[in-house]
Each structure stands twice: as structure tokens, then as C-alpha cells.
Image 1 (cartoon, rainbow, N blue to C red):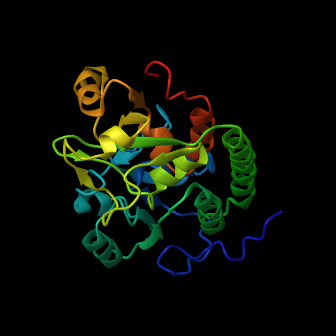
Image 2: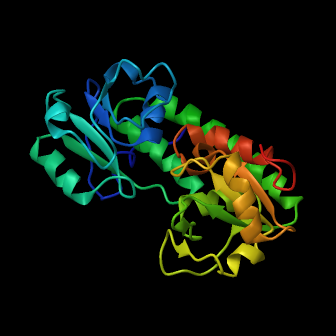
Length: 272
């Protein structure tokens, strides 16, 4: 069994004591799902509008706005002891406002799939769910090992992963999404960029450099109707496929299913 002695230090370097009777507000959709996977459903008192998983089970949890549009009056009325945020998804000024309310703010920042192991330990350690955290860790390691074996037998492909249109936006290789795709042998383009989520023009060479263009279901909800226009930009030899963005960008317990999903996703076949 893994030690949980280092489990209480968050992404900002702050140590959080064990809190067995916490009242938790999650401002991160994937973490809301993770809290339920850690058997903390009864302690989750608030969530964002985008916290939709586990489907049905979150319906009774009070919504307090979006990830970047928090209703602080509604949040304060819940009297949370802990609020969980993410460096990429939530605003710095909101973190300061949350601290002013007297809640402990737990900051998360997974940068790669392997960081899920530390995330499980962090939340399992703070909220007294070490056993559940270790079980998730074992499940994640099994899927990670299977995905690495899967990658070893395949040719590396180049993919353009789109997250937005008007303007077109993609992901840099230092993002969680790109590192997740790399586990399956898909290297994102552009290879070098000065921003983590770069805009690309319609004549950018990465359209033609890619073996496939992957259209994420989030944050922009790409649909079948977008494929024809994107196919024209990428050229007839490039595959254009829809992909479930939750499986590539959500960390936490969803990442376990995400690795399995990638092993079953064929970028050379029809849209999935």
C-alpha cells in the first residue's frame, strides 16, 4: 500500500489537514466526478453547471454558477469548509475571494495523465478516503500499462486536435490533452508553439501535416456538420474524426476510462 504522508500538499504547495466531515464545493467538473468515485457524495454540497458527472447522481448538488462565473453569494450560503479549484479552469481572483470566505481552497493542476496518481492521493488523503484512492490508483496503473503496450505495437501518427472554431484553436504538447494522446501514439501538431492553446489560421501548415484532425466535443461542441468544412482545410488524404473530449481532457476517475477509450479509437476509420 502507498503511503499517504505526502498526500495533503496541493499544487500551490499548501498542506491541508485531514477533514473527515468536510463540506466540499467543487469548481472543477472532472474533480466533482472524482469526489463521487472516492465515496464522498454526501459531502459534496456545491458544484458548477458544467459538473454533470456522474450523471443523475449530481442532480441533488447545488449549482453555484460556472467555472469562471461563480455566484459567491450562493456559494457562501452553503458554508463550505473546502473549495476545490484548478489552475487552468478557475480564475486567480476567484481563489482570493474564496479564501476571504474562510474556506480552505485546494488547488489542483494535473499536467499529464500520470499526475492522476498524485491527485487521487491528495484528495483521498485530505478527506479520509485513502483506501478508495489506492483502488483508483491500481485501476489507473492497469490501464496505463495496457495503453503503453498498445502504443508499442503501433506507428506514431500526427494529429491536429481542435478545441475551438472562430478562431480555430488547438493544443500545445505541454498540455494534459496532448500528453494523453501521446500515450496512444498520437503526437499533436504544432510541435512548437509559444502558447498552450494556440490559434491557427486556415493556411497554417499543420492542417496538411496531420494524419488526422480530431474534433473535440468540448469546450467547443464539434458535430458531424463541421466535418465537411474541416476536411476541405485538411485535404482529402487527412482523416477528420469526432472525439469525446471528456475522455482526453478530464482527469480524475474519468482518466481510467479515457485510456481504455483511446485504445479503442481508430483515427483511420469512420467518425466514432
